[in-house]
Length: 329
Image (tube, rainbow, N blue to C red):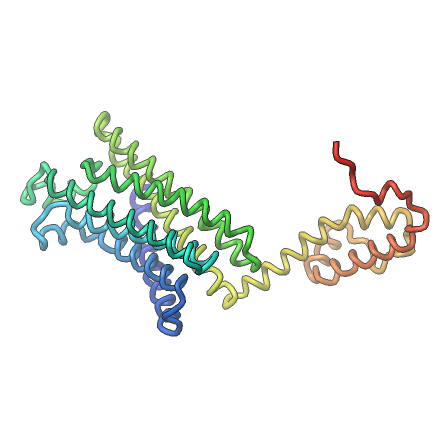
């Protein structure tokens, strides 16, 4: 399980590099577009943060300070989370109010990073850099507990809550189906980020009380962090690469199938009263399902036309009460 989770994390890191380079190419073409700048900062921040993690022992030895690589990785994660908020804010508007909200979040980020740096300097690691556990790498697999960790988790938890709220609010304004799907994936990824925060706190407590369970709890934390990054990565870039692989056409086809399914009960009711109005044979069984899947656009148009024709034919016999708006209680 642990090796599978770590392999997944390596795959996510490579995917982050690909997506970061892809969006940086877009940024080079349009450097003044604020949402794209924020998105690129978020992608690059989390990509470098993920890349640092496997090399923490070597980086600590090179820098001469234990846990400094962990500190840098955590701070880059917070930069990425703040940039994700800025991306969602700029997508909903680019007025002075939006820029003020972004500035407030930037100040909160800087204050948090300053607090983390101060706590890191005032509370050095209890283990020496030349300790055998550090040299062997076992130190980096054990549950980590330090004062600056709680500032990191508190800010990250608040940021993920803000991302969920902003993405859910923007879903209502998004017109493109792929954009709505991407935002929903961002919401899911931010929710998994909150699971990561809770899992990290739980792992610290479990590691202190039951050291033998450290590896299992660490696997849960790594898994939730990896899933969170993967969902947010896919959701934030889906509107740009989705049309290239045909996801927009697939979404439109599935939407036509869903629309036809919703219209079927009303269409069937019209057929019971006016069977002669049917333009095509009624789809039944597996063959009917295949006919709908083969050309859902035609089936949706046919259902709409038949319902409107039935309404026009039956209108003289309708009671005025059936067409009146419902009364408020």
